[in-house]
Image 1 (cartoon, rainbow, N blue to C red):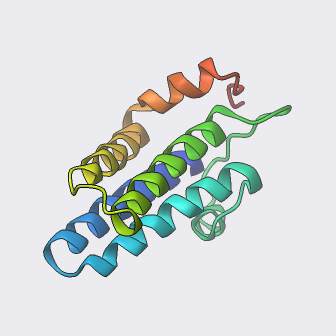
Image 2 (cartoon, rainbow, N blue to C red; image 1 turned 180 degrees about the horizontal axis):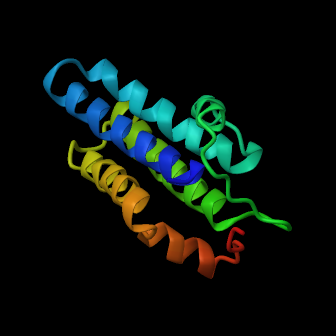
Length: 134
C-alpha cells in the first residue's frame, strides 16, 4: 500500500466513523468530520498532514510529482473541499441532514480508492490538469 492510498483509507474511515457517531451519539462528532476535510484540503497544498508522518515512519512508498500538483493532491483538494462544504452547510447554515449523505459517499469513495486505485475524484483531478504521480 502506498502512502497516498493509506491516507485515503484513513481519511475515508474517519469520515464514515465520525458521521456515524455524529448521527447516533452526539452531533459534535461532525466537527471531527470537518477536521478531516480541513486536513485533506491543507495536505493538497503542503503535502503534509499528521498521518503522513506516521505513514512515512512505517516506510510506505511515497508517490510524488516532479512538476506541478499531483493527481493525489487534486483528490485531497476535491475531497477536502466537498467534506468541508457539506459539513459546514449542515452545522452552520441549517442545510438538511441529507447533505451529509454526500459526505458519506466521499468517505466511501476514499476508502474504496485505497484498494482499487481509482475514484471519481481521480478522473476530475486529471481533467483539471493535475499530473500523474511517479
